[in-house]
Image 1 (cartoon, helix red, strand yellow):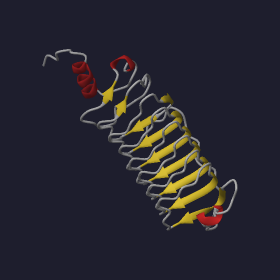
Image 2 (spheres, helix red, strand yellow):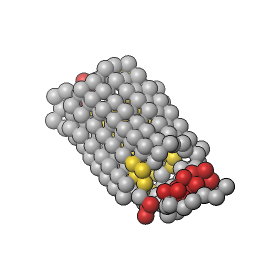
Image 3 (cartoon, one colour):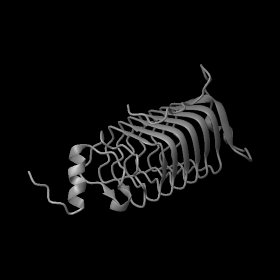
Length: 215
């Protein structure tokens, strides 16, 4: 995998005990920590300002969950389904998503630091106006995702599907997409300078500039 800066992984103790998500019920300031939530359905949960620290979610369904302004540190999601969940305005630090279904997740206006997406289905995700600092997308489908107005710092896209991804008003200087695939990608040509691409991708961008490629 291509790495610009080594990502900090979630710092979790070994052998975390099983805990129930419902422990937050009745809490004035909902928080959950130091445990594993496994094999449960939490679809349509609605919790604002939830604080998660040192938690593993394994085989958990969070479809349509509304987790506005969530604060996560040292958290792992493994084989979870968060499709259409909202993490808008969240703070996400040292968090790993492994083999998760993240279709249509709303990460807009969030702050992501030392976050990894590994073998995930993250098509149609909303990353509008999101700040990225040391974030890795590895073998992840981002088809149709929206990165408009993002603030990128040391992101890595490794062998990802970027088909129909939108990078509007998003400078791509120094970002390497050469190992990624797409049929169409939406970028502002004024923000394309410095983007690292493969020779075949360069031909496609040259055509966008109106150049005629002579065989």
